[in-house]
Length: 231
Ligand code: SAM
Image: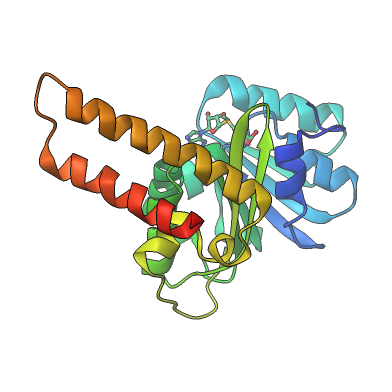
């Protein structure tokens, strides 16, 4: 993967960035997403935020080598602290991190959000707590995407602060739109997770040390939700 040939995962993220956006890509690593979008003429400006020095330097190099230093600012910063008031950011991407981490970045950076940005989130696991945060903070989920690449499933969640919505526990667990659409990839993913949950419950039953009851109940409830959804 590079700025000319994105991975399928980042290609699917890119598809949700509106034309003409001013993008903040937080946790940008090599800055492939903003540079690819700028090369294609999709976005008009970008901020690439990185908390770690090595990816920060990699991002600076990609931007420099593509002659895009005028329109992409690479900043060494923690989370949304990379965004400055004058940036006029209209879309924020947070990709390739755990859902809890993305949630924490959004939560601790709330003061940097105008509320008008589109959020394009690609969590690696932890989707449920991330969707919970979105709901608790007045975001509607506009689009959900699921893809499989290199044996892993990736979810993409696109949200905007249009109006408050209430999602049920099952919608927060599966994704409200994915639950409606039930794509083949979605069903295959959850059949696999159901087998894992059932194996975990069997392991709990055989464990030498008692597993906390709350943990058993939680796994059993998730297995029941999945069985009911697949039925
Ligand atoms: N977004 C790219 C992608 O999806 O391919 C890179 C993903 S990489 C696995 C995660 C990146 O997020 C790392 O470069 C890491 O340094 C950065 N990161 C993690 N926590 C961060 C934070 N709080 N603020 C900014 N960057 C962060």
